[in-house]
Image 1 (cartoon, rainbow, N blue to C red):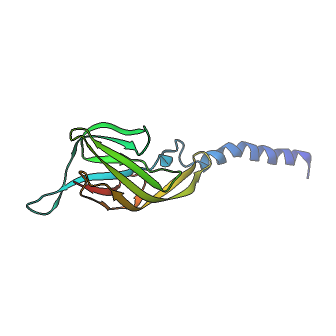
Image 2: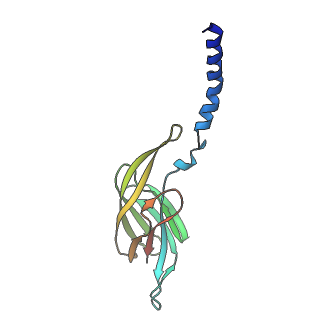
Length: 162
């Protein structure tokens, strides 16, 4: 094969390379790799009907247990809470400080962490599934798991009943 044929083949391959690389990237801004959050909805049980009704927390601050990390600061009339789960451990403990009542509750969430590959540009993400929940009962009555998979799609994971 003549030398010019090799050069032509190499030029075609080199000029096609950027197009191939650009075509491989599905998510240029890595929005699918946003940190998944545990979505918690607030409810109370109507004593007359016995039915759960959407409710709010007057004023709440959420911190990570035994740290000074503030996750939510002074959220007023909270109908829901969007809370992170730990990547490095399979147990996350969060403290809800009820500022108007001077009380607090601790929620401990047990979950599995499964890393998965997203893309070369975006790297790895963590799939987190809630397996169980424990809590103190200062103001919280009960907590149920509505969807165990904590993700970045805004789906409700926990129902917190007061």
